[in-house]
Amino acid sequence: DGGITQSPKYLFRKEGQNVTLSCEQNLNHDAMYWYRQDPGQGLRLIYYSQIVNDFQKGDIAEGYSVSREKKESFPLTVTSAQKNPTAFYLCASRRAGQNQPQHFGDGTRLSIL
Amino acid sequence: RKEVEQDPGPFNVPEGATVAFNCTYSNSASQSFFWYRQDCRKEPKLLMSVYSSGNEDGRFTAQLNRASQYISLLIRDSKLSDSATYLCAVKRNNNDMRFGAGTRLTVKP
Image (cartoon, rainbow over all chains, first blue to last red; front, side):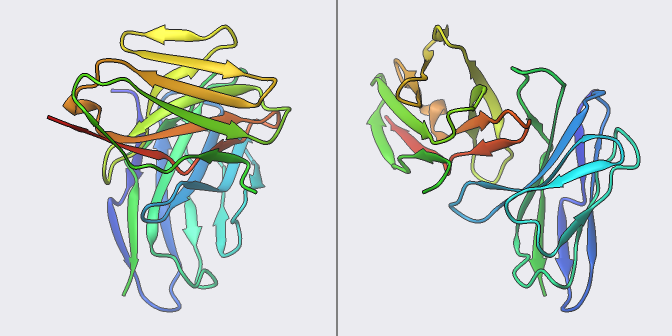
């Protein structure tokens, strides 16, 4: 089936530890996005990438890093510099074109131990 | 001021009611508009795109008012299964998307 796969579904981070969230899509979409959602809040954009080997910061990029070495993959690293990482992380992708919507993976819940 | 704003609700309506949500956006260069539905602890799922002339999909009608910079979603004949949070999304001309915080709807028997 075509889709966006995020893993793991649940992740726990220790103090001072970096963790990486995986996002893979087989939809041949050009653009990929990472959002963070806190309880009762909307989605806040962390990073996005429109093509391979290129990405841009969103509104809350501090404490996060990404890479886009392959079209189908856009991993997000939550670094130890991110002091409040507990949230629901959503990856999305979209086809190029003005009116193309985003489609989401089923998310990763990150908690701090 | 947030770039995309929605009334957070909650909206509590009886089955069969008609309910409308509004969403305002501040960036006049915004190009594309969408409504998503998000169930509790799940990812958002596309409900419908919003076209300039307005569009309808069954019980759902979406409208865009570029002059006043808002989009709306109308749900007719509400069902229990419509209970969810509804997010509006706005694509800017640099291809990133901004979401509202969502409007929570509960449809009661």
